[in-house]
Image (cartoon, rainbow, N blue to C red):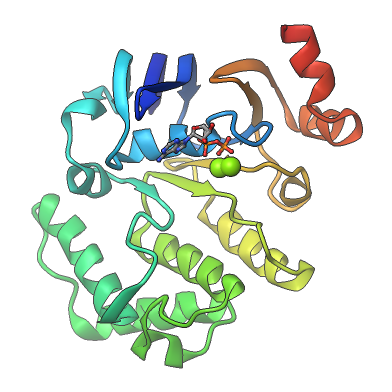
Length: 249
Ligand code: ADP
Ligand code: MG
Ligand code: MG
């Protein structure tokens, strides 16, 4: 589904990714772990098409298409979605409106009609329930005045409604208490499907007790230096990143 090959990326003339290669197949959950500043967020931002990143070498393809040729909206419509790809706060724009317009933009790109309003409401209410969110969320402006935990739930709600082919979630566990993290993890687990892939970016292993990845990649200094299964995350928890950084150096 996703093929990243020899990716080199600079931000403000500083080289952040230094030859990163990664393959993700449909149906798989991958975790990218690594020390602060390794380039984890940069990787998901570049795949999603955020501004400010310059790809100086390498390629990214999604279902065989050249992702680097696509605008950020085209990528989202193709089913490649980063949580919080939508602005962190949009004053005055109601959550429900954002969800509806994003969903219908996606359908339009596939040549489908808008989802009829009653069907849309049914879908959203079902997903709200599974995220243990109150219906009043829908009428609030996007993320305006949301707590950290509410933002994270809202991020998963977007994923549950939009059903991307590749869902990328960056530090979805940060700042969550254990109960909120379980709700978020349940939401992510309910996204698992054979036609979908999930990319989790996380500094800590904790989340991976609840969302068990098929593959774990360790990103250090702009490269993936080790790949393993869920056990690798546990080793990192026990030994930290230092051992790996030293063996790489
Ligand atoms: P991680 O998510 O692994 O903690 P990031 O991808 O956020 O790492 O950052 C990697 C490096 O790139 C860091 O050294 C960071 O300071 C730098 N960086 C990221 N974004 C920017 C930016 N917009 N401007 C300048 N430097 C940035
Ligand atoms: Mg960071
Ligand atoms: Mg980060």
